[in-house]
Amino acid sequence: MYLAAGPVVTLTLVWFGYFLFRRASSTSTRGVWLILALVNGFGVIFFPLNYIWGSGDLTFIAYHLRTSEVWLAVPYELLRGGGLLAILLGLETWRERLRWVNPALSGVLLTMAALSLLDQAVRTGVVQGNRFFASVAGWSAPVLVLHLVVLGTFVLLWRKRKKAH
Image 1 (cartoon, rainbow, N blue to C red):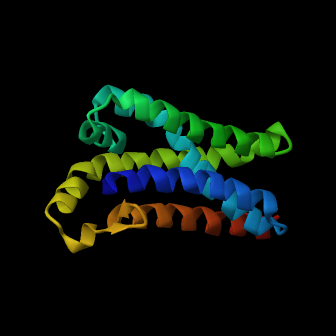
Image 2 (spheres, rainbow, N blue to C red):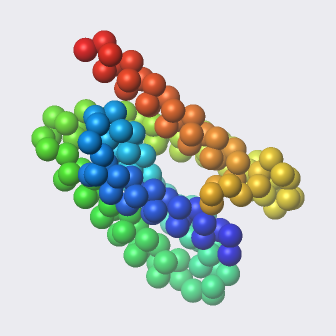
């Protein structure tokens, strides 16, 4: 059931990022936690695609539990969507929401495009027990590296933009 680690980590990052965003005092720290929460929260928009394609961790978990994916996916996506809504409502103005949503959504779309292209290779590596594809914090190593690169890029670009103003 290691497949549950990915969805659990994603939900945790949405709500943990939101909690730390609300508690942080410095602008840069708030920005890091906000991007972490937004990037993981925006994955909710891909749920219909996973359901249509019959793929994704929840599909495999439902198969192994011999239940309908809907019984797992609907509560999961409601929790994730609720986290995304809480994050967006936690921002003070619509201008601020749009300023943060644009880069976060761009990052999610680019990440998902890359992961879609690499999906079969990653799954094959995991099944074969390749150490490079070992699970790290609920993700296979290449997926975690990709997420960290996206997060790091956002932080660097945001700090550079902040210094320019």
